[in-house]
Image 1 (cartoon, rainbow, N blue to C red):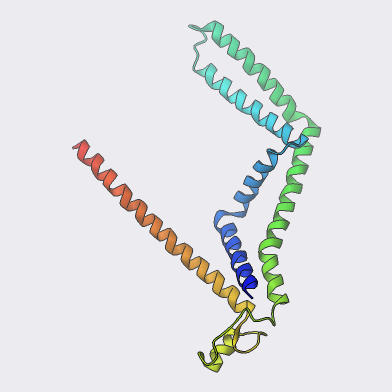
Image 2: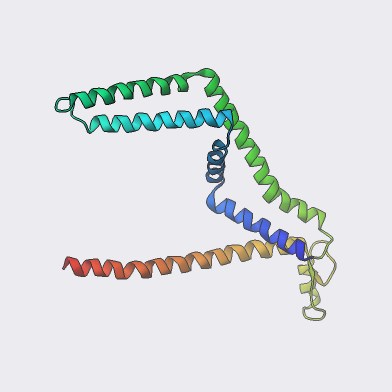
Length: 206
């Protein structure tokens, strides 16, 4: 059952990534990607975001321009800022658009949550029940004591094989341990690479 072995393994990889990265972060990234699609809702959201950035940029330029020494430039920026602000406030205050974006975001979040649960924990539960009597793989005959074979086949797999429940536990533990080891190695490499740079800066300062 090579396909079952790999399916369970990749399901646990997905579960670990969701738990590590965070469901809210993934939802936000997916929503940003959704807004890039050519739909009316995403078009309005992009236009609203563009106006907001334009208002902030013009406000920054106004603050950096003297209203006394560069009055003409400051007045031109002020007119652009006021126009962009009016358009942004009108779009933000428009009830239909606001309700449309809010309803679309709520529906999208629920759809993503359902799809994420079905493809991770839901799939894991389904595999555990559907393949509860199916051996993931067989153990070599005579290699393990009978009580070990019983534990590895628990609860309903044939004796002398590894059950879906046990393989789920093995995959979850192995992925967590490997991820911890890789993270520790990366942190050590980063600290080692940062040490010569800090030493060189200290020597230059002296």
